[in-house]
Image (cartoon, rainbow, N blue to C red):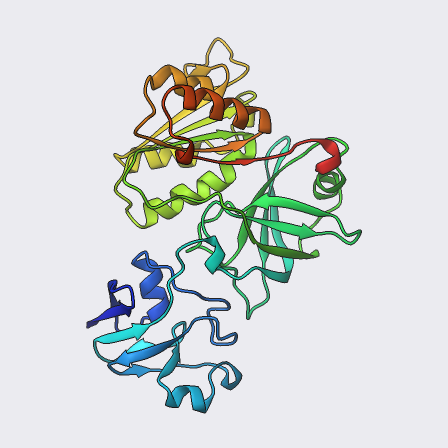
Length: 336
């Protein structure tokens, strides 16, 4: 049996199944409620029950006091519905609504995706989760006071582990450590989420332009959009040096088969006679396909020179300045 939940003051509505927490149901319906640990320990998901009955579930007493319960408050990561409900909570509408945290993490596993790309999966403490918007990044806080930033490649609804794609830069302070020293069970500190590179709520067709590991945040955006069955046209242009550098082509290829509103166009700098795809600079492949960009949004991520060229040339094709969203990766050895 399911119940109807109305969020105030927005008026948004979603259904919650028997035994399903209010937070899980809201997130699955595409409504971003605030949360932290997702297991009743931190209190970040606290909201008010305006009407209806809930089972408060299992939680730590320090996260929800008797006085708060008497005022109708509940932890939405634990509470389940016993009737139709009206709840009061401020929905997360932008990056500024999400708290930035400094957290310890453990390297759960590592996998080389290409000769110069390492995937790292990080596990947070049992009582912590990191709420973020798809496309945002985290900083590693290094012992010498320096920071290194990497985009989250997993979508928010799949946050049991945080996935990063790290490109090896010869001589890079941090990436040399990743490729030659780092191992599973290493303990690190991170801070995030950060950044304003995330998919906007719009009905315009979206063009994604990724260079190298700039694919990582776009992977998060697209996986999130497909999870929520977002009904708008998407196309991904992913540029890489050569075929081995196109390190995860199967996933966008599968998305293209499953979703009629998505197209995947790989672009290689260095082509071979047996390559049947596109060649050249990735943003120029977009220019070859779109003579007028005035009705589109563009999300570009990769090396600064690519992002800058895309901004300049796309706006010359009519793309409004406010419809260009980007995250430029600095691959210089001193910064990596």
